[in-house]
Every structure is written in C-alpha cells, then in structure tokens.
Length: 140
Image: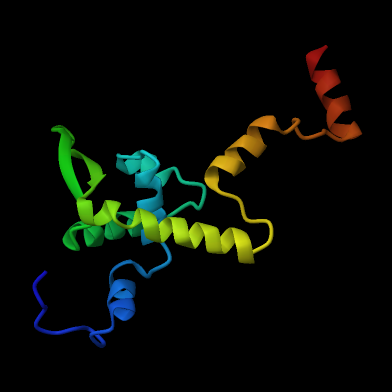
C-alpha cells in the first residue's frame, strides 16, 4: 500500500478510516450492499430512509475511495449497479464488530434480519372500535 502525500488530520489509522467511512450513512450503505442490494433504488429503500441526494454523494465518495465499483446495467436512461470491491468486502469484519457491540451495549437493538422476522411474525395492528365501525359501514 502506498503512503499518501498528506493526511487530512494525522497519520492515525482510526482518524483516516473515519475520514472515509465515518459519516452517518456510509456504513449503512455498505451494510446493505453486504446484504445483496445493488441498485440505487434498492439502496434508497433502506429502513433508515437515506435522502437521495446524500445517497448519491455517498456512492460517489465510496467509489472514489475504492470501496465500491459501479457498472452500467441500463443505457437509456443510464443506470448503475454497485458492488463492493475487495477493500469494501473487508469492511464486513468492522460491521460485524459494530453489530456485536450495539447488541451488547444498546438495549433493544436488533439486526435487520431479526427486525424483519419480528415484523413478519407480528399480529396485524388492532383497529380501534371507531375504525372497525367505519370499516363495517363502508363494506355494506
């Protein structure tokens, strides 16, 4: 690995890693890509609701950093598919560590898989008496 001419803050690996992926959204984009999301639409459809302008910016930054690569999958209009590079795939260990830490130290946190399983097994929300009465009137 070549040494950069200038570091943004210091030669500290933690500081430099945070400069690349330490914002609020980058690791969530990487998490989703590790879970199989590939297109802009799939990435925009995450439960955290990343604003589309920020998603576009993060994809650009991650590509410039060599963490993801893009390829055209449709010409008109041009649409891109995104994939993690080897450098990006290496972040899986980091995400696993963050997940373990969060589950251990932040009560009530669940992985996306656990959240989806809970949601799938949950009973439908109960409607109030007023809502049930309204539904009965409209069905007659």
